[in-house]
Length: 587
Ligand code: SF4
Image (cartoon, rainbow, N blue to C red; front, side):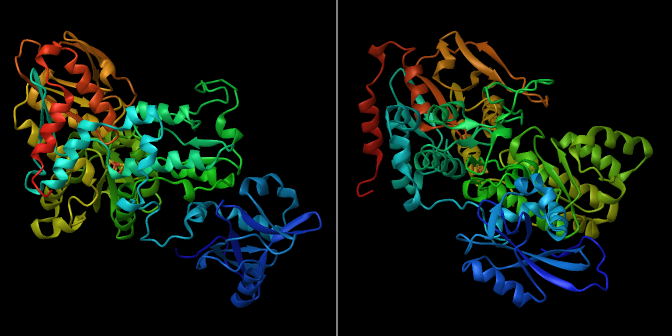
């Protein structure tokens, strides 16, 4: 992190100060009488460091962040995260919010440095990490906490499925057919199950973190910034166990009464009640800088409970790298989705950034790149005003671009957008030079493998020409909707987007969810559809999005089975036996 200067250095003496933060992002300050001062200052780096280390044996490597002029001196400001409690009473940790509330007691140098912290707040929780480190790495198998999925009957129904386990066991032991869809033959109905479906590693990591946090902190308030994942049943199960949400997936805050804050409503928000004793889990989608900064100022441990998926963070790192290389960042995503909001929030720190939703929007930008005109510039400003960084200037910021994406969209669409921009810049700058205007050699760099694997597996299952398909996932689950789109393209209105078995009421009444494609608001609707009941020995494809627990998949299978006469169905034990028999000997 390059150091910045807040006020021009003068001929005044230079002092060195260490800002020591604890894991709760609270700053160590020195109490002198009724006032508060910088805790660790020296006329050179070694003196300041020795004062820091007299109190804290363990600290992260120190890094310089900025210089500020105050009280007749230039202060060079270094950050470190420290462990332990300070020696003696005079040094104590206070949150930035507490320090702001006691502004009158702050020495001028401390007040000036706190005022200069704002651009660097986001670094504070992650001082223990290097630039290439990930906040929350995927757990390897031996670190996974399988017990949380079977801790009681409610968890078992939600998360466990004998049928899904049998299919996975088959895939694990039969590498040659591991990519082929499995068939569960119940007689009157057969199910085609793609080789990959349901929970991704990012979701498993976030779920385990949430349940573990609740179990390890009885008596403490545990919040989730918003939904942990886009599955209502998982979120409800966590709420039943005491977890509370601060805001909706569309960033609408909850009041302390549990309702949604309404315009003009003065009810206190849950956000307002947070203290450093509370726990706030950041979901797999990540969080915006704005939300994280609020937590940092309150002295809440951010990094410890940050369950941001490392593949989302990989997108942030790509955006940062592109920004440093001088590219503007175009984010292919849904502006209303938490992940895209978080990615935009990260990207704007490093590059002029812009969110586009589709190839059609890319085409509008392409026209502006090739043939700029006042009318096209005005149309761009109108369309992208809230979707771009405030100073985004098409004349300057569309000269070199790089595309990153919301991880859960269809890969082909992002690739089409990148190809489209390559074509535009080749037209404008020639075949050779054009490519240097589009960043990123690896086209799939920021696509999530899990989303892609589920999509590819679904395509292979659709190639077996099933009669109908149920795609299971939350209404706000983007990756589930992409799976549904693939099914709809192949099967038309015999593809159903459902949330659980409860949406299958009868043969002529399936509650299909119509996803709000074009709207920025969450305005999807349920639509009654018929099930294709005239078929005999029907073949039904069933899959689940990356946030769909296996238990729901099994419940849907059992619900569809119940639509057929029991006399025409094979028992589940026989179907499980088929799977077992398919495992190669010695597998
Ligand atoms: S879908 Fe991909 S990016 Fe999203 S949580 Fe899962 S692994 Fe991470």
